[in-house]
Figure (cartoon, helix red, strand yellow):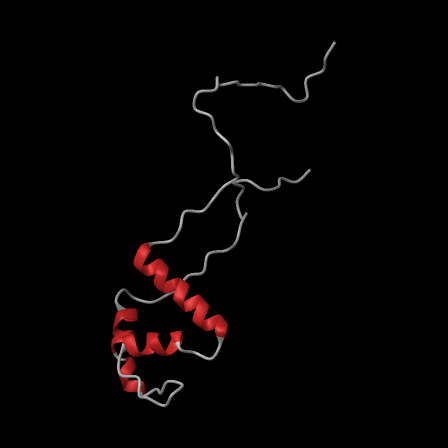
Length: 106
């Protein structure tokens, strides 16, 4: 039977790789004013902040929400991922059960 799940080679989603030299994103964002873009109200976008504000004022609700969440993550960090909710009582005794699966009982 083939292996499933876990840490086997090739498991999981493939990581996307961006082949940009360090610092390129900052340079591109720094030159955003050269594009002479206009926001929804027709004002010229001069810098990164104007571009971010135009995304927050977008007519597309999905863009507004996703960008707002990204700004929150940038400012405050990503929230910790929750695992299964386990109710843990630190005063309860620890019980360990060890079972051997596959053993034949006589």
